[in-house]
Image (cartoon, rainbow, N blue to C red; front, side, top):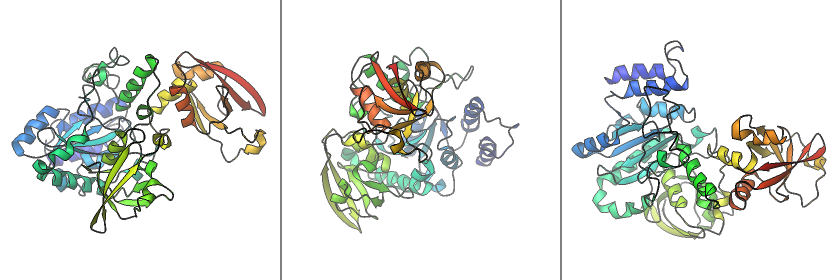
Length: 445
């Protein structure tokens, strides 16, 4: 398919045409994505082996986009990449570009990335060695703040530079992959998924229902612990920690340039400054913030992390030791996979801090009573309706969980339920409703 025709059709797919021309339901989006790109001159659709074969012939690195088509998050960014926006077009020409629209059949030994992302990129040498990753999120609706084309362009350039000196840096790339899964080699093999999905999409039937979303890998992993009665380890409960846990925020228009250093943080102790560039962590060259998160993701509790920093053209080395429990400050409430935690821990409720309209003093809580969370939503269907069935309602204020009142956030409740309690345990919930205290009991799922 010519580039001009592809661009015209993509304009229709992504909003240029009327709804009658391209209906925007989930099923149509997935089918249109395949129809418009499987014969593209610039994208290899859903066929990584073909991409690697081509890369070996052209001696180019491979750029793999993993994209959940029906998801609205990152839609605009994905559109710009697929349409080859001028900011990235020339750089994309230096890669063999592969697009994978589902998690079905993914090789989990290779595709180790943040599964709560609806758009992620992995850069590969033509022999399949991982060069690095791109794609990060820190909130439910702020993907535009976390990923911008200028930053993607810089990450692509770093990948090209790394690939050009591959023989010299091969050893430093070893840590970019974790161990291969011992049991479940691809998502559809997990017990919670194997009877529902196969290793490919069903384009002859209901294609959306046949698709494994990336976050379902995270859900399935957690369920294996839950079903076996094991507590969730911190790295499973708090995956891919944001750099904010060590006090760093990076400018999304760059690959890894520091834009903010939080006071009294580990980063501040290293004497980092805005404008410093993160070059490497634990000896691994960084292509993006996602690469830095990978290092944190793989760092054990109380582990040490080394940094190579470019400060005004001068290379500086730093090392920090992460304190016990450091992961627990990583915000997981925005993650799609947190909804399964809400099902298991709360029977389907979404808990938020008290709104400004509610004066905490009006609740008449004692000074040492910390817990007071607003029930923003109560699930209505299936297993997410257990709290509703128990009698809890939207607008209730949760002031007690499992006979404890010292929790301060939804996240702390996740940890208690997933690490201290087991499925089948009964938990008492205390709430305030219309000024009255009420008690309900749910059974953890």
